[in-house]
Amino acid sequence: MSVALWFGIPALAAYATATLLLWRRLLCLRAGEMPEKKLALGIALLGVLLHTVSLASDICCLDGIDLGVLKALSLSALVSLALVIISSLRQPLENLALPVLLLTMLALTAQLGWPSAPRSLIGTQPALEVHILLSILAYSLFSLAALQAGVLASQHRALHQRRPQIFARILPPLEDMEILLFRLIGAGFVLLTLSLITGFMFLEDIFAQHIVHKTVLSLISWALFGSLLLGRAFLGWRGRTAVRWTLSGFGALLLAYFGSKIVLEWVLGIIR
Image (cartoon, rainbow, N blue to C red; front, side, top):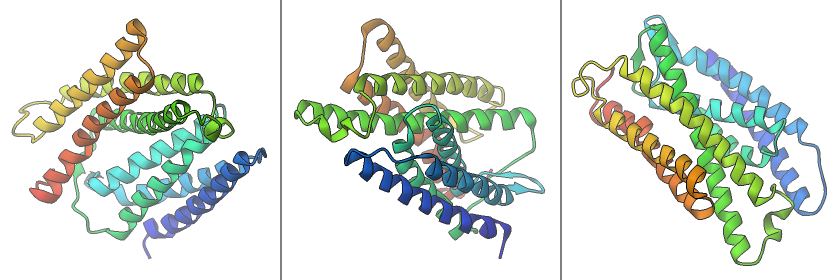
């Protein structure tokens, strides 16, 4: 059995255990109880460490770094989960960890279950690796912002239907949730800006390098998130407007990062 499986299977077990504990905690919160969250987060963190070793053994090759679609998805999910766990130690984000855990389990399962998936080798260039790291961190933060926007949309719907008690016990107040959303977007926007700047350093021929769609969609996403932050600062945008802009920006980014990768590697068979 490969190193990836030796560490990946225990990671999946840890994720499943943490998911069950967090789900049980959610049910207890709805019943008015206050169960401890540290055990669930600790087990999830153990899963993150095991997942890291498993993924590192898969992506590190003698001739560079393999960031094919499935490995890139697994890495993005891993970073997103790590960010949620770390943030949950100081902010009430543990309920956001539930969907992230499920997505991470799916991504890790795909990575382990399809070892022969198309590869995408990237040479060992420190500056290029910095660009990739910035891109993954930005995507991970915007993934969390999109999930947060979905939760906000549900809260607004419950409020308009005069059923605020549905979320009252399990989530912070609506205003705090919106503040957290814009903090995620602000941090993601800074990282996305740095990612675009460093990416243009490696841009020689946008058509020959097959990144025209990725570049255009990334710029569209950057413009959408930048407009949302400006709208928040000067026009007081919030609520459903913030949700729509967040999901639109994330949709463009999702197509830029993974849509173009899937088309290039799986449909056109272009391995870079």
